Structures are given as structure tokens and as C-alpha cells.
Length: 235
Ligand code: HEC
Ligand code: HEC
Ligand code: HEC
Ligand code: HEC
Image (cartoon, rainbow, N blue to C red):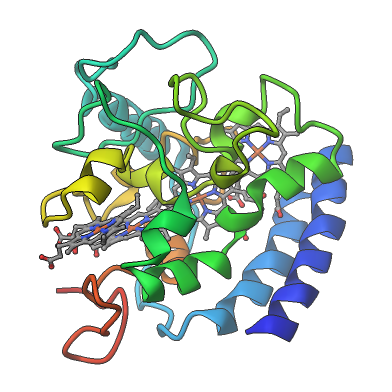
């Protein structure tokens, strides 16, 4: 994975600058997707490959928001510009802390190894390459836990740079203290993604096409792969 990841970062930085400068999004998107494809050993799913129609995408965003009826989840109030809360279930924000992906890696090494190869692991580098790493308009979706007392707070919280495990699964401090199934349950659907992959930021998003590029989670907490030997395989 090592050499390929290096090339990919280079391509991503190149394409990032292009995206920031001009509206060549559709053209440039092909670069990172092509670069990502060989990194996760899951065949591209059959089925529709077109982007979500705009109205369907916006409806999915509304559904994702509706999955968070209490935006505070019992925790401290969210200020404007906080990271979007994923539709995770059973995770309280009260008395719970973000710990960072390296902590998760100790018990979920296969998921962590996969994550490290994905664009999510480099999302803050993308902002740095665009001189936007301090821009409050950009940080919410490119770091982990912005707005929570234990979330991203700049250079003092390097473990929470980029889109870590907990950006999707929710703060994991309580789970790390008492590991058990049931933490961070997420739907295997676009509802887990569209809070960040909004129509405006990710117009080409389609779960069936994006998930295989980050697929993980069927390997068990000891890093074993699923019975069929494929991470992220459908149940
Ligand atoms: C000390 C070991 C340990 C650490 C650290 C740890 N986990 Fe876990 N995790 C477990 C165990 C054990 C389970 C239960 C697995 C099972 O029963 O299949 C689990 C379950 C999970 C599940 C749910 C799986 C299911 O089947 O319900 C998710 C999601 C998860 N962990 C994510 C994380 C994330 C994200 C982190 C970092 C914030 C993390 N874990 C840190 C041990 C750990
Ligand atoms: C907390 C915000 C957030 C959530 C939630 C999120 N993403 Fe992302 N995603 C990002 C950001 C930011 C990037 C851009 C990373 C970069 O290249 O800097 C990205 C990039 C990606 C890419 C790479 C796209 C490319 O052009 O190379 C894939 C694939 C992806 N996400 C899949 C998913 C899937 C599938 C989900 C839901 C299970 C999801 N993401 C949920 C923020 C998020
Ligand atoms: C609502 C969440 C959100 C916000 C806010 C956001 N982004 Fe992103 N950004 C994303 C997602 C999701 C992607 C991945 C899009 C895709 O590939 O489909 C992305 C991708 C990018 C990319 C392209 C990365 C690549 O390799 O293709 C750049 C560059 C970028 N964002 C910069 C910024 C900047 C600069 C800001 C602030 C002005 C910003 N983003 C604000 C969610 C967000
Ligand atoms: C971009 C969002 C995202 C990120 C980042 C992410 N996950 Fe996941 N994860 C998901 C989704 C969505 C599922 C559910 C997939 C399914 O049901 O097939 C999942 C499933 C899992 C599962 C299995 C849960 C179950 O019920 O079977 C584990 C364990 C897990 N993730 C751990 C991790 C760890 C550890 C990291 C970081 C190294 C991580 N995840 C990063 C979105 C994410």
C-alpha cells in the first residue's frame, strides 16, 4: 500500500488545487477515484453509478439530519460551525470524549489499516494544501469532533486531525473504557455520509460507489476478517 498511497496523495493535492481554483470538479473527480480503486480489495458493485439526483441527495441530507433529533445528545451545546453529527446510535456526547483513530487501531487494526489508505485520513492535509486549515468554514467536515470540548482544537489535538473513526461513529471514550458491541452503530447507507457529502460538497456522491473505497468493519475487534474473507462485504 505504501508506494501507492504516496502517489495518491500527490494526485490528490494536485487535484485539490484544481478543484479549489476552477469548476473542473467532474473531470478531476475521476483522478482520485481511479487512484483509490485498487487500494480496497472489494469489487465495484453492480448497479447505478450516476450521481444521486439533486432532489434525492437533498432528501437524504434531510433524513440524516432527522436522525439527530437531539443535536446535543445530552452533551454540551453545539456552537455554530461544529462538525456535523453522524447518525450514530447509542452514543452520548455527555461525559464522553474523542480519543482519535490511533487508539481505535489497537483493537481494530484491519479497519484502521484500511482507513489510513482513504481520503478521510488526509482530509486536513487537503485543507493545508489549500491554505484553509484554520478556516472555520472548512474545518467542520475535514477534522473530527469540532465544537465538542474534547474535539479538534488545532495543533494540540493531532490525533483528531482529518475525518477519523469518530467523525462517523461518534466519540469513543466510553467504548474504549468498556469495549462492547453496539457502540457507533451506523446504517450501511448514504444516511451515514450525507451530513458531510452534501450535494454542494460532493455532487457526485453515491453510496454504492463511495463505500467500496472505504469499506471496513466486518473483520471483528481482533482484526480477523469476516467469514467470507472480505472486509465490508454485505451481510
Ligand atoms: C480495548 C479494545 C478496543 C478499543 C480501543 C476500541 N474497540 Fe471497538 N470494539 C471492541 C470490542 C471488543 C468490540 C465488540 C466486538 C464484538 O462483539 O463483535 C468492539 C466493537 C466496536 C464496534 C461495533 C461492532 C459491533 O459489531 O457492534 C465499533 C463500530 C467499534 N468497536 C469502533 C471502535 C472505534 C471507532 C474505536 C476508537 C474510538 C474503538 N472501537 C476502540 C474493542 C475495542
Ligand atoms: C465528517 C465528514 C464526513 C463524513 C461523515 C463522511 N465523509 Fe467521506 N469525505 C469527507 C471529506 C472531507 C472528504 C475529502 C477528503 C480529502 O480528500 O481531503 C471525503 C472523501 C471521501 C471519499 C474520497 C472521494 C474522492 O473523490 O476520492 C470517499 C470514497 C468517501 N469520502 C466516502 C464516504 C462514505 C461512504 C461515507 C459514509 C459512510 C463518508 N465518506 C462519510 C468527509 C466525510
Ligand atoms: C459540509 C462538509 C464540508 C465542508 C464545510 C467543506 N468540505 Fe471540503 N469536502 C467535503 C467532502 C465530503 C469532500 C469529498 C467530495 C467528493 O470527493 O465527493 C470534500 C472535498 C474537498 C476537496 C477535494 C479533495 C480531493 O482530493 O478531491 C477540497 C480541495 C476541499 N474539500 C476543500 C475545502 C475547503 C477549502 C473548504 C472550506 C472553504 C471545505 N472543503 C469545506 C466536505 C466539506
Ligand atoms: C466515513 C465514515 C466512517 C469512518 C471514518 C469509519 N467508519 Fe467504521 N463504519 C462506517 C459505516 C457506515 C459502517 C457500517 C457498515 C456496514 O454496516 O456494513 C462502519 C462499520 C464499522 C464496524 C463494524 C460495525 C458493525 O456493526 O458491524 C467497525 C468495527 C468499524 N466501523 C470501526 C471503525 C474504525 C476502527 C474506524 C477508524 C479506523 C472507522 N470505523 C472509521 C463508517 C465509518
